[in-house]
Length: 143
Image (cartoon, rainbow, N blue to C red; front, side):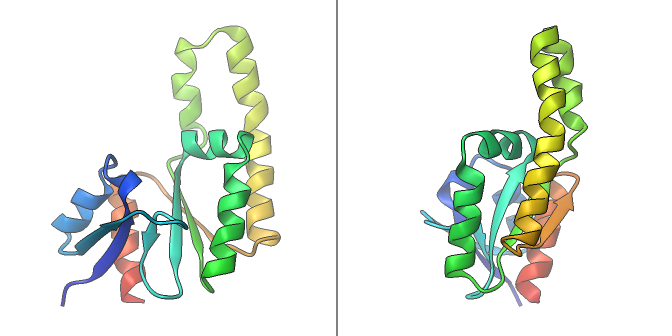
């Protein structure tokens, strides 16, 4: 039996939809107002790469997205794809001031994740890469 996942149109540029199709999932693209993936009537998932996580903390998007998830879904999830130390891999292209700012932001990212888990009560699942994210989405739709 195939699984069906609703995918936000803005996720078309990621590898996830193709990986989901390869796994046998049926993909329905839609312009979602909340979340990036809907796996059930109760569960929407916001997916953040590490770089997007950091930028969404600083532009205020992350907490708005979490608030909307909890308003519309009883079992929302946040998937964080990648590892925060991966940001340091990009540091070779940064000057000293930019590197200092990046390093200062890492503890703030942990603070934001703690707030999401404790205040919004949204579970956070980490995946190392898009391949594992797609596997997790298939597992979630089967739950």
